[in-house]
Image (cartoon, rainbow, N blue to C red; front, side):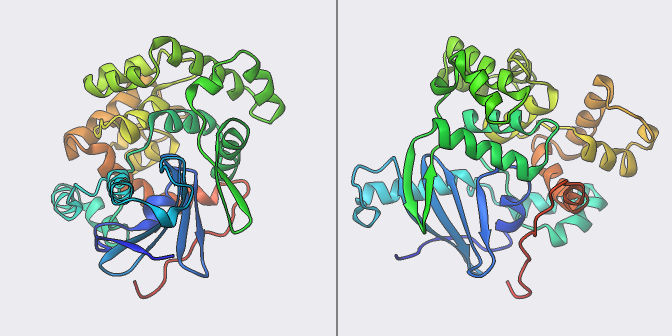
Length: 328
């Protein structure tokens, strides 16, 4: 199959840090081929890079009218290209922002040398929300397994490739029914089963996709408060959704690792606290918004990636992480 190309240098997009940094849980790396396989927009993608291009293949999709990917119309090909550009927010010239953030913050200037090209993925709100419900008190390998269970049991089959069957993330309507809670408990979701079913029912009741669109149009803090009305959605998950799928790029999710970065390097009076209180949460977020401006959540994600090795070392079932090749 032919590889399609989008002009984009490695400095503007680093697939490793972006796809392996805890934003999305549906990407897998093949160390032998230096390729990524993942799913978004009901489509299975294969990605790789050279020095000047992002290369991609569409392995299967529920969006195209023909059954064969090789028979895509010109319009469909253009659609997939736009989807990928939108997903990586390639309309943002990241080098300019890195320069701006480096001038404001010495720690960022050091971190960005290795963690260049970290993009904030523009994800679908439904998948983003339920993936991060799964993330609560959890580690990455188990989150990924839970997300795949949701897709396998409630999503639609997209295609088969290399002996594996790929499924789309389920529409919110599929998760709203009362029996879903007990089914998910049987699948090992624990207390998160209730949060998923109840939140899905609330979202459908409030308008589904249209409700999410209304949140995008709100001011960030208003959208955050609306999200926290959902069952099981606290400040951190609400901020993840605002940042990663509602285009509120000033949102800054504060977890233990973000707290440690802030206390160690920016707000020393917060050192030694046992829990992140609501007041501390707001103080940390507001500090970085003052430092970085209206894209504070994106800027701080670079610092989070720099701290990710420690995060991964705490993973109870640590798996081998993809190694960055010497020559990019």
